[in-house]
Length: 172
Ligand SMILES: [Ca+2]
Image (tube, rainbow, N blue to C red; front, side):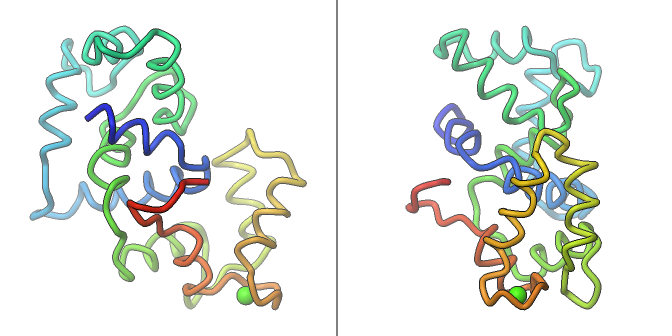
């Protein structure tokens, strides 16, 4: 699990955010893998449905305090100081596998994309709200990076090309 969490925490906040959206959706599906939920339940010793840093650190005794803190903060995409089951599912079950076209489309729609396309105004609004740590310049730069053909719209292909992470590739 440590290797998996390390790799996930190296993803950009945007990519982690997209995986949390997919994890939330995944947890509502009846037949998906639930190993992550069982792990989460083991770590969540008080069975509160949220894991704080001390429980997280206790579950990963091989990590240094600094690394555990850094990974914890990466998983805690919502910056609540607690990890939810969706955030944990994103980091463990979703983070390491290839996302399907259907999941990518669902994530794009959850971000406000209409007909599989996302315009800058919507993108900016969603990111300002959900990833407030990103500056306006960073949001604009990210949009331009995703919009590879420069037509002012992020389509599903562009979104997928950016968000998809191959296990063997270097994470950015
Ligand atoms: Ca485009």
